[in-house]
Amino acid sequence: MNTRIHPTYRPVVFRDRSAGFAFLTGSTADSAQHIAWEDGNTYPVIDVEVSSASHPFYTGASRVMDTAGRVEKFRRRYGSTGA
Image 1 (cartoon, rainbow, N blue to C red):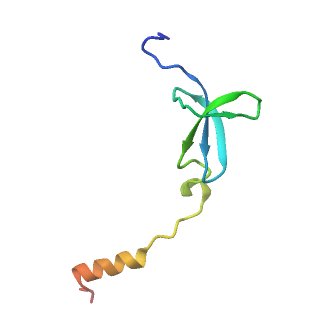
Image 2: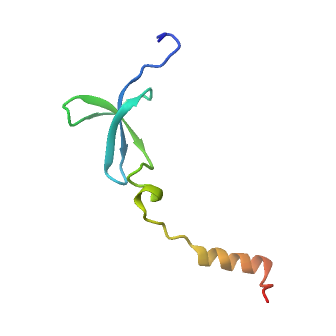
Image 3: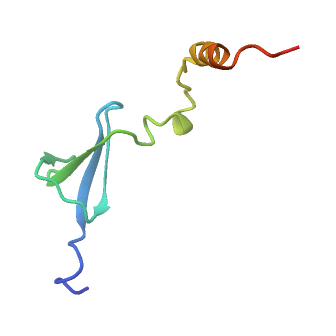
């Protein structure tokens, strides 16, 4: 690869703080923060908001939505025209 136009591909740790989950993978992303990994080496770490450990699709857990509040707001706005 041409070093002038391609970013550096290196091992990076992605960490999901909400789930306490981290994984090591290759990436071109860079970070000023570093973390000591299980193998004893230090890698850049990137914090993510959602990962497979915290996403409801993968965990099977559903989030409680305020559906009652939305229904009431709809009824106030458009009225109840049901039979």
